Amino acid sequence: MPGGTRGKIKEHLEGVHKNTEAIKEHCNKCLALIGDKNPKVQQAFLVLTQFTEQLDDLAKNVYSRI
Image: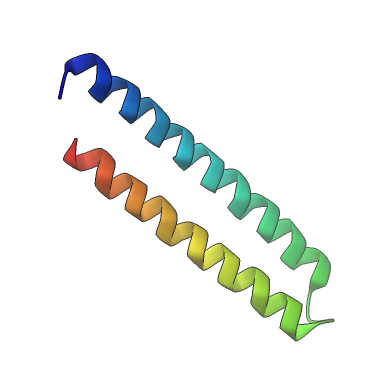
């Protein structure tokens, strides 16, 4: 893979990481607002946060292999 392409892909993967950090931050703010008032919605945000962490881990894995 040409060096320029590799660098651009790494830049985009860094963007994925930054976006997942923002998503997790927003989910945590929602969780703070929800508290224990609505367990189903709370669980949904917990799952969304976990999924986001998995997505971030996958992006890091790809990044390390390029």
